[in-house]
Image 1 (cartoon, rainbow, N blue to C red):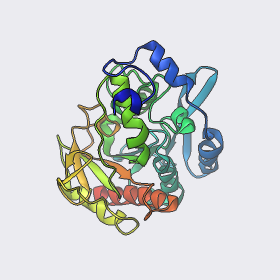
Image 2: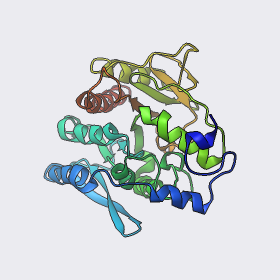
Image 3: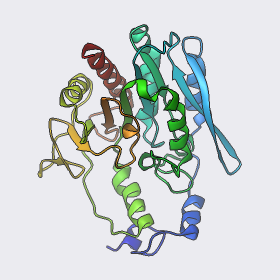
Length: 306
């Protein structure tokens, strides 16, 4: 099967130009409402937390406000923990897991650590259930200076004044069946490369920073999440998504080098969660709960080891 048979846009071996990107964009359909499903939840949290609009994305005739949630008792002398979700808009539990954490658990950390939560970094992609923004750019490869992605640039600007205080950053993601059926083939087509099929791991896993690994921190998160949903096993080659498994449910990437969200700070503790919502062994409720549990475990570990 050649690339063209696998993905309907572009010419195999040739990166997309403006025409192919416009073709791709014309096929994107709004499937759900950021205002109804995300902003409305944030609004209900305003009586208990400080909410700010940290940016606004303009795409065509659409405008998307970007919201961050802060601890009500914010104290600039305390360490700061950053929670991000929805960098890939289609990864639903990243968004709703972050909001669940705020609603059900953030109060438990009042007075102990400052919290900054950006629950839906990519609202246009949330509505289209997609990985990219309208320019066919992946925000989660764009956390670098002069970012080509407005989503990434806005988030980096938000954290800039407090960047040195950030001791922990947990970025909430999912790995889905559509990664293999849609998003990886689209990426290969966009970049003019052959699509190389891989597997989709069945279960939860974490991505640590290969430049500054924190194995005990990762393991604390895995242990907490394992009480809610199953942890992804290694494949026959001892890998998860092509990377060696260094501990149960843990792989490592060079986060900053790849422009990943979890690599945009120098926080000593950082991780990317990956839930598998398409598993027959997991429900949407479990996925959201697993994300919230991961945040809680990460925070408790950091507080206990500072």
